[in-house]
Image (cartoon, rainbow, N blue to C red; front, side, top):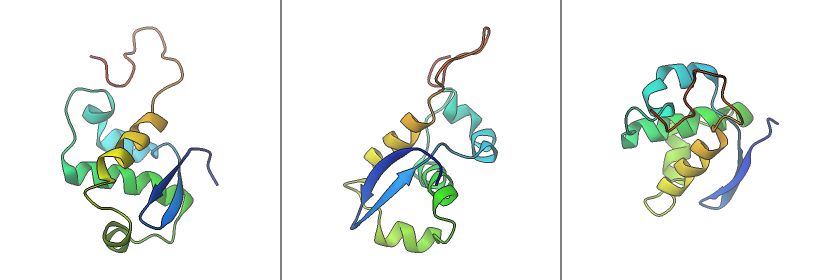
Length: 98
C-alpha cells in the first residue's frame, strides 16, 4: 500500500495515495490551480489515485457503488490534499497558487 489519507466512500474505506505522475501531467492545470476541475476530471483524478492501492477497482463499478453527490466533493478535496507538495523548489508555485 502506498501511504495516503483514509477516506470512507459508501460502505467501504479506501487509503487515498498521491496521484500517479501521468495523471498529474494530464491534469497539470488543475494541480497547479490554473483551472478548476470538471466533475469528470475530478472523478478521473480520484479514481487514478485510488487505483494505485486498489488495482482491481473498476471505474464504473467504483463510481456506482461508492461515490454519490453527498461524498463526491469531499472525496476530491481529500484527494487534492494528499497531492499538495510538502515543499516547493525555488521558482515553482505550490499547487493551487499561480
